[in-house]
Length: 390
Figure (tube, helix red, strand yellow):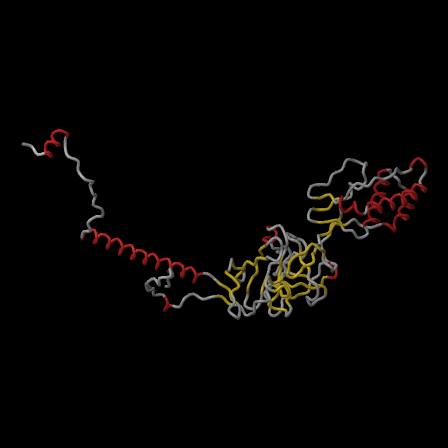
């Protein structure tokens, strides 16, 4: 006889079981512990080796860099390059204006230097300084060697688009102060410039020397195009149109030309009367400009002389006219550009009352590489703060 449970099982199938419980986790074996130990230890050894290699490379690079400091140990910066006298040159970034510009400053033991000189009235580099415009190759084109054409021109400043920078006389002379070109013209006439602070010159004491910008090279202007209508005319190769300079004097030239032409016609017979003269242009060699001194008289004399020659006026009448025009006889001359701009001091960003270079005290020096006894490298365990040391 079957029990009720057995009968129920046979009638309705297998008896239902309770909920199954899954067992979690894993078994830690000796092999797993050994593997973890090897991986962790190897990783730590590798990290320490990489750390030491990075530190050694960093310190090695630092020992090769040339860092300039002043007498108080204040760092001026890292040398960007070296000039022809092995003086390190550093970039100074002028952030005192709306737009920031860089300029290269040379550092010697007792002074700052720049490629561009500063110009002063008188012979002692005192008063308001002036500076050349960027890429000005003609004004005072004698460099530190005294040879014409060697040029005291900083093209790095020109590549930035403006302005020009230069080191001039400081409040105490040396080591010098930094100045910047302004939009204003130099308050000193070129003929009155008597000295320049050429800081890159190798000299004992202050690098102030006498200079004259009045003795510039000149050449005759090409005047065949001065009278319009005589014949088609263009400036010859190697010359440039100076019509912009001539235009500012055109009203005065026309008035003087009309008056002189009227006097000349009064001496000529009716059949030789000269027609009104229309002024054309003058031409100068490239990199030269038309000299404005006596320009009105010179233009009037040249224009009327050309018309008289074209009209074949000769004999006694021409001699009379030559005597009449003699007081106007001047040469049309082209000369090298003499274009100086007023310079202003570059101020210290932390103290606008001081020059940017006043914060540093000479003599200047550079850092030295590690001594021979410091060449051994030791592994130092981490401090827990993520720092390391050689």
